Image 1 (tube, rainbow, N blue to C red):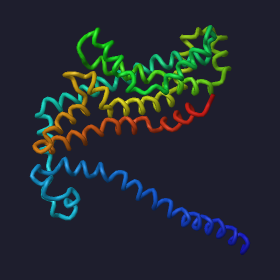
Image 2 (image 1 turned 120 degrees about the vertical axis):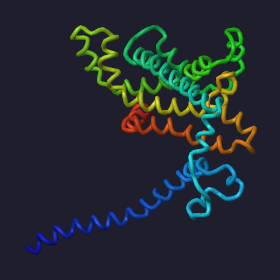
Image 3 (image 1 turned 60 degrees about the vertical axis):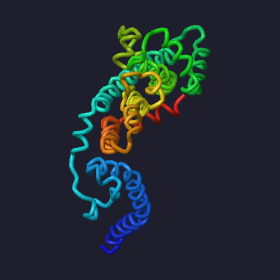
Image 4 (image 1 turned 90 degrees about the vertical axis):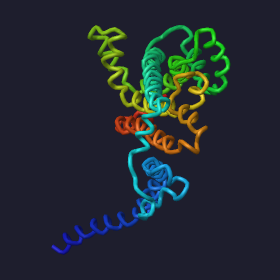
Length: 291
């Protein structure tokens, strides 16, 4: 009986000891998380404060009771500004196609590079990988000259530029993920009479959801936060980053609108990340280490 009591007490002590050993790690991550979230908290509080208090007291005074009242007047002013209100729609119209188009074409090309045999397959893949090291900025002037022959700036030119530059990385990511799929699954599909298109739709794509989700999150974040490409090619339909930059030229009189617009611009990427977070790490790791 005493031996059994000791056996039960032993694991309990080790569990408590392990919990105590993990306390510094937990404290570190809690502090790091608070520091990481602090700018977003400050931005939220600033966006809720009256415009007259911005230059008088800091946003942190709201927690001491001396920071004045908060409200949503700044957000009302934001949607009264046609430039900033319309820029959110422009950003969605840019980011969504710029994410979907590379997924459609890259999954097809990755399937071909993984499972099909055709002349020059290795050379074409190496050339595709070489495009990954080309900086986006190097193509701005040549593409701007090409776009000049097509028509005026606009949303379509912005998302086509982003989609084209995302294709090499997306193909590389999806091909590495496809290499981890057992070849026997494809063979069983062919034995049932399925062609490559049906195998791609019914077998490969459902298994590739983690890789697609991880790429979609990265691509959407990249396009949504982009300033340079939108500044060059958007013209009269600026995304939210360009609209905020234009509004900052009148910083002294529009800081209330800028803070509200900046905070709202953070929400869509966060919603996308939380929607696909269960696939994110799995797809990122699988697409990066295989092959």
